[in-house]
Length: 194
Length: 142
Image (tube, rainbow over all chains, first blue to last red):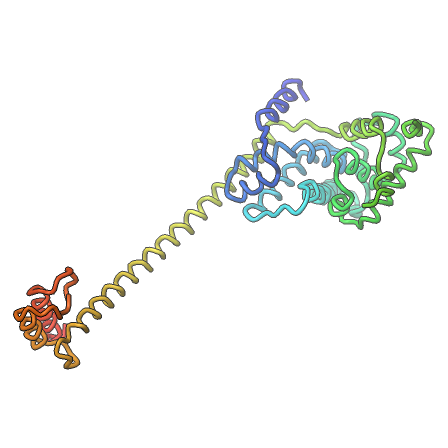
């Protein structure tokens, strides 16, 4: 993307900084405040886009999924009730829309439709960014996702379970297995040594 | 969550930073055209919601106004009916010109017993006239 687009994107984010909490913005949007929805869009746009890219492996598809996700979210107003972190609501929407988008693309290309659980291809042109990434690539995507949701996104285990629609026990197991792999690998075990 | 579980899920800050780098490698920049498309649909959606709410509000106000009007009409008729029931001075069971005469006699005699038929706060000739007018109206069947 051109540098000017990058600057425009960052400028837009800065212009839309809103100090209200997600709950306050949702209440305002339920009351008909379009600006509140706009604030929510900019607050979660990049996260949704990155997640969609992780799932689709294609930037254009990811942008389509991003739009569809927010349109899906938009139609919940008025009357949307936030029961936990907004990411737990958005995550399955992004995942399911990404799977649908990939299936649609494969059908259009004449390929056999894939099962819903096949993991996303590696985003084109993107290799491991560090040693941790290299080790995590030996794990299934489900382990990587759980680790990222827990330690980068800061979701609790129940929130991760809700987002991924899996039991909390499975979340704990994947975190444990993921960390165990990092501890055991020569490239990353030093992170755990004092 | 107990302390053991808490300890199990703690990781060093250096590892957290590495995981952040992993997450950021899939960051994509969203072009302004995509922002515009989403926000345009959002604007249209909220305009539609606002229109529907205004419509519901207008209907509610109309319904409320109709109820108030009905209550007012009913209340006035009830009040009038109550007043004219009290205008049956001679307790004959109906209001007629004889009640007007009876009230006129009382007023002439300086009696304070009467009925403020017209609701002006006083019992006087005006009330006599009101009873007479009502008696004529009732006779006509109006």
